[in-house]
Length: 328
Image (cartoon, rainbow, N blue to C red; front, side):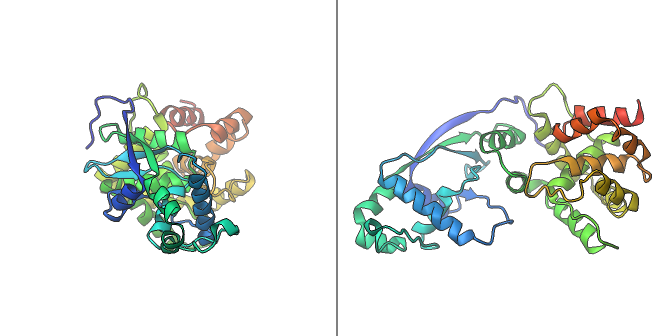
């Protein structure tokens, strides 16, 4: 398992031309991790992104600096959620087209046309420099996550997509299997939990059962807790099976469904927002066995409601909520 000596983020800067970045991309040396929840207007979205970038380069504007996560083999995972650079690479490789409604940019639907009709602009694009802030591989992984989310303010789906790439060697796909188990064995209409939520609930459940502990003196507590939970899932298959069984029981509980409806939490979808309320409520209800009476009493306290609405899921916060529930 990973052992960290320091919890400070180590950066270094690299600069590459667009032509070099395209070459790295074709050799799988730089990876753009894209969410599976893509909108129906994807082609239009990328066309507009590419158009904006081409016009900006043509006017002499520098590209925005991007942050990347260095992997053990020296490859880069791009943390940027804007995907302008990805859209430009796709255009250069002939995988997408653009349609600029401007006479100045006629006959450049794809990059081959641009090279034929506007060779100066095509060369200018390929020579444009990309500045990268590289998070050193020796920096703890949870700090790569913290930095990316801090800089780009990811959606829940974007955050978890990056997390799956950075922790792909630690059985993080078990979360998908748990989600599939819940869906395939549903006995009635119930909430569909995202992998993002399943991980957060597992963290709360692990703290309750004294299976997950975190050094509260370290930095980036929420991301560290998620990492500890991933490691627990990776190391302990029996824990995963027990967790999946208990999660199945709670999400199919009539009492739990009533709680979600009563507190207007049922409709929250963490794939679109960074709201953690549904995961927190689910996790705490799992810890309250099956009647959820302790949790219901807590929800009569407005201060408690505000706390779970706006707080991060950290070891200290979860411990505080559990202590309040059980009056420890």
